[in-house]
Image 1 (tube, helix red, strand yellow):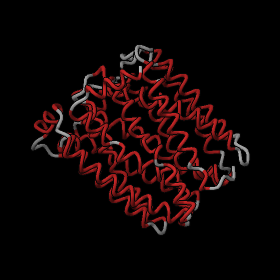
Image 2 (image 1 turned 90 degrees about the horizontal axis):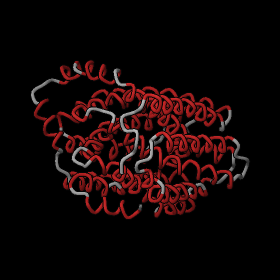
Image 3 (image 1 turned 90 degrees about the vertical axis):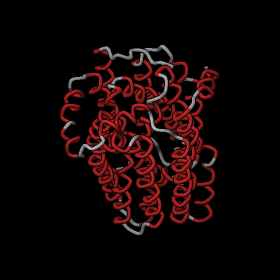
Image 4 (image 1 turned 120 degrees about the vertical axis):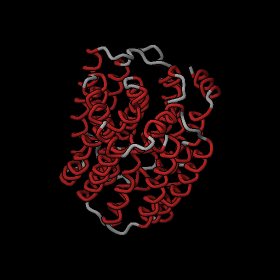
Length: 416
C-alpha cells in the first residue's frame, strides 16, 4: 500500500504538491515548542488556572475570526488569504511568545494567533480544491507525514533544555519557529496559484460588502442545519477538538507534576509519538481504502479513550505507562485526523466550501472554548482530572459516529 502513497505524491501537481512539500517548515518548529508551551507559561510565572484562561481566550478569539474566515477566503482568494493571515497568525505571535514576561503577553499572542482560523480554512481549500477526489485520503496522509517530520529534530529541544534550562530554551524555539514558518509562507506563496473555485468566488464577491456577505450566512447556516451528516461530523470534530486542546495544554503538567518526570526527559514522548504516527500513516491508513468509515473511527476512538485512561492511571515515574498511552494516542490520532478531514470535505457543498468551512470552524471552536478554563480549574485540584474530562467527551464523540453510521453518511467508504 505504501507504493500507492508514493505514486500519489509523484502524480500531484500544483497547489497540493506545494502545500505538502512546504508543510515541514511549519510542522517541525510547531512540534518542537508545542509540548513545552504550558510548562513555559508556568516557568514565566502563570498559574495552571491562568494557563487554562489563556487557552480559552485564544479559542474565544477564534470564534469571532471563524465568522469572517470564509468571507476573507472568498474575497481575497485562497492563496492571498493563506499568505497574509499566516504571517499575522504565526510570525507575530512567535515573536511575542519568545519575549513573554507575564500573562498579558500570552493573552495578546493567543488573540493574534486566533487569526490562524483563516489560513486553516483557506489553506485547506488551496490543498484540495483542484485535486482529484480519489486522492484525498493519500493527500491528507502526506500532510500528516509532512507534519511529523519533527521526529528528526525532537532531540534538539531536549538538548537545548538540558543546556539552557526550560524558559531560555523555549524562547529560542519560538524564535526558530518564527524564522522557519515565515520562510514556509513565502515559498508557498511563490509556488501556489489561485484555485479554480477561488477565482470564481473572487469574481462573485467583488464589490460586495462584508456585511452583505455576513447576511448571506443565514442561508448557509440553514443548509448546514438541514444536513444531519454535516451536523454529526461537526459533533465528532468538536469532541476531538476538546480532547486535543486539553491534552495539548495539560499533558506536560501531568507528566512533570504528577508523574515527576523531568521536563528535559519528556521530549522522548513526542519523538515516539511522531515515529508511531508516521508508521500508522504509511502502513495502516492506506489500507483503509474501501473500508466503511465507521469501523476505523470506532477503533480509533476506543484507542484514544484507552490513552486517556492510562494517563489518569499514570504512577510516579510511570515511564512505561506513558509510553503505552502514547502508542494508543498516536495510532488513534493518525486514523482520526485522516478520516475526519475527508468526511468534512466530501460531506459539504464544494461551491460553498469556504463559507461552510467557516461555520464548521466557528461551531467547533465555540464548543471547545470553555474547556480550556474548565480543565485549568480541574488541573489545580488534580493533574489527572482534565483527562477524566477527555474520556467523557470521547464517549460523546462515539455517539456522533454512531449517528453518522445509523443515518448512512454519503461517503460510506473511504477513498484512496
